[in-house]
Length: 130
Image 1 (cartoon, one colour):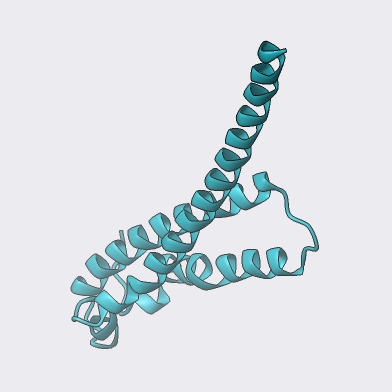
Image 2: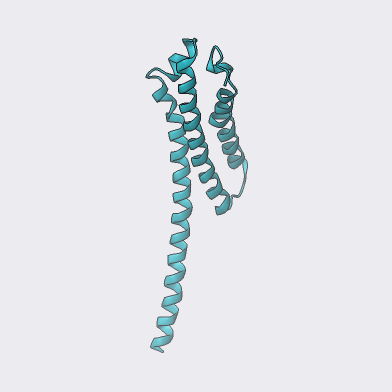
């Protein structure tokens, strides 16, 4: 692999930008402008955000390794110094939102399933009393 002067010129950096900014905010925009959203769509969005967070963490780790061997000091500031910890906040945010969406779908489904179960068993109990 060729080592460039800076990680900012590497394809992996631009892929990280796409996965960190463009893709998630495009997903948010689509969901905000939709008038009705199914549970499956919300669930898919939740899993997508968790996957995006995982990919971002991989990219950040890879860029830290690349930045350590480049002569550029600019990329060291972001990817080798203590500032790089702050870069993990965006993937953590996406993962957190994704987990909350998944939890919401699961909680809604389980609440409805419990209600249906109670209604079914209440009818059977009434029939048994008659």
